[in-house]
Image (tube, rainbow, N blue to C red; front, top):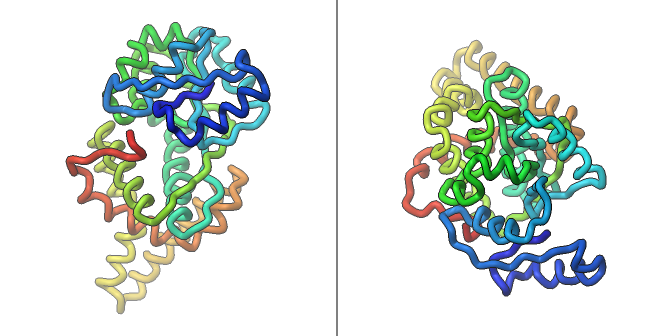
Length: 290
């Protein structure tokens, strides 16, 4: 099922072609202009939910690349009735410009390592929006999609409702790909600001606390203030070696050659990570029409 809000959406001719090739019983196109809340993605999904036929719902973003074994893999854990929701790690691919490379590093070398660390240590559970499987009956028990319409970070809120109900959140060892496609560097800037705004709104204290683990810009500042001291340069070397080393190890484990290719931009990306802080509180929190 493909869900769109706008009858003039440029994706419609493509999905209509797929529908003509495979038949309307296999390819369903849902076009509904619904404004239930502030979250454009949830509004879009509400239109599709009206036409969904089965109890198991699999939700994936339109920019994801999914392998043939994806559906069987992601629905399998739902055989356990104690499992409330299933999600998968993801990595960005197909970066073509320097700013798309920075976007790729934000996810592949910053966000996903944090998610995997939290999963391994049990610090927190993740519900990742690009790829989710959940039973319709479970979703209804959690308030349905309507209850998520005014949450800008609907995936986090869905996950929170799952684990506070005592259900299991499963993060599969199965990595999907999402295509990064930014028309200009301003789109990258807007998306990074939007990402930090949403993360702050979802978990303000933990988000602000991440400043203490952003070692690279502080190590650079410390070295600048003590540039004549050898130990300051040693601290900088250890910091950069640790940062680049861990990013490379994670990329290797995820079979992520693109992150390796863009690692020279990692220092710049980490410094920009502190720049977006002052932009957490603007009135406009829109991105991509949502």
